[in-house]
Picture 1 (tube, rainbow, N blue to C red):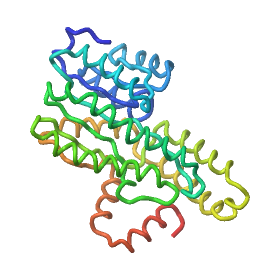
Picture 2: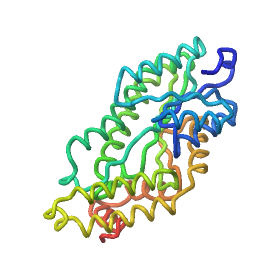
Picture 3: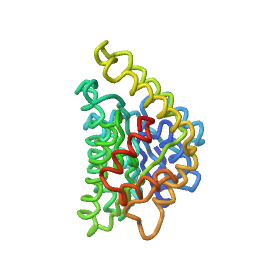
Picture 4: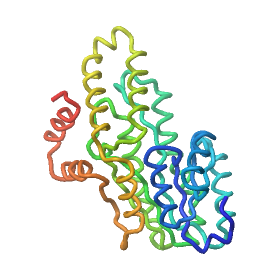
Length: 289
């Protein structure tokens, strides 16, 4: 971990920093002079970011669903920071479990909530003492599908919607301590995610029974094709990371802000359209309307 002498500089912790958007956020913060800590899924990711950042980012392999592992990581970061506390926590880690809700195993849906909700809560609560010391800021990376949920993407939208609610509650509960909470609503992005998404989509299709394929196969294939196209044509992850960092530093702190024009459009649709219009829109987006 960075030496204590470096902690006159601003500090940041980024979950899910081993790849995709989180990796680019960590590198962007390091380039701006932050002391950066983060979590990764493997030793390979740790070494990759160490090399890419010239040793300016310190990653730890951490399973976000294991509370003791989270506490150990946060404890090490907090000890390294000492009385200076933590200036910025970016809660970025998350997984995607696509598929018809009827088809998805409940354990798979629970796993998504374990990572996207309970893992995020575990990190936030563990870092609160350090955030209070610095009167720091939390940035919760969300998605527009929390506001305009899509068919075959229910667990992702639902888990992120849960975090949007909890972020609003945290914002109120932490206001008196000077800790801001910002929800960064991500749009479609070109990251390492599309390959993972394609693999997840293929797994669901492969595990469907003949009856399930008869019920959902054609519409799910259309959704899968559309989703891959949306991600491939989305905002590049470096630009998205730059926008997240802007929100992390913006004064005064926004409560919620889009990352990408599509996110902006979907948030506006959620505010302005009727339920019937949104029902039609969600089918249209995935090629089923």
